[in-house]
Length: 319
Ligand code: UVW
Image 1 (cartoon, rainbow, N blue to C red):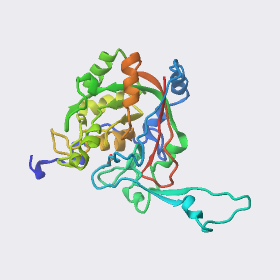
Image 2 (image 1 turned 60 degrees about the vertical axis):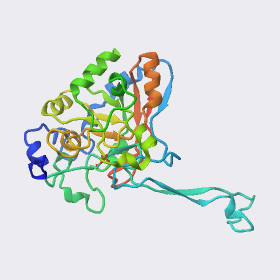
Image 3 (image 1 turned 120 degrees about the horizontal axis):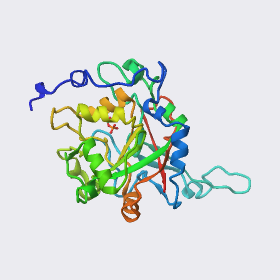
Image 4 (image 1 turned 120 degrees about the vertical axis):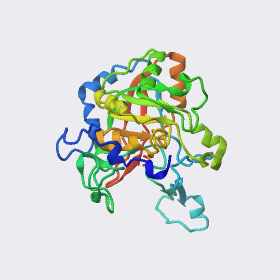
């Protein structure tokens, strides 16, 4: 497909559904509004075995940190440690206290993270119709902060697409649709319900750990692929949150139209679906394969960063 035949997002999504205005003119958390007290209480009822899983990837993993091309992995710097006090170097506290301090320099989208609803846009408008110029110098609208303030709790369902397709990892550029999600759920003996938090395992980032920098050659992650029907399905199912173990939650370049990351716009910008990316679903998936329980209590709170376009998070799953 030639560059010029790639449609603009405005053209592609001209008739696509939006939830703009549904929760008022000042809303900044979008489809997370679908997670009310009823959903939280129902999710708590799914706690049966007491097994707890944390699904954040390690920041500063010795094996490397997978990031979207152009971003760089977090750098942690030791500022204070016992060497600070070698000789009489460190501050002298009555009682002899020594301590360690460190800091990180990190892209907020450079590890397991929630995207702010205003993280992506086209046509000069963000989620809920906010002017894209409100992002200049930091997000005044639809930043990650309101998501962090409210937290995310609900029924999570793991869809193990890699296992469903009989693969160790999905392949580069491999796609799946909402119908594949339903078939996967069916094969796992679980039913997707409205307002579920959907977690999709591809295990694709295993290739990052195996291939190193070669992983980025011809970069095209596998993932959900745009169709009007898929977008309508997300709208009808009132899906509040999409979580995957890939860097961007969807196939990088849509094989049908050549657009890069169209679902970021169709789901996040237009419907207000929260995106959680770069999760580590391996331990959870292994457990689900063993006990055949693919539904669970899910809770997450990204760290609170004023004006942030995203924020690291360590979601918790309890079965
Ligand atoms: C981009 O927005 C490019 O990526 P992500 O949502 O994966 O952080």
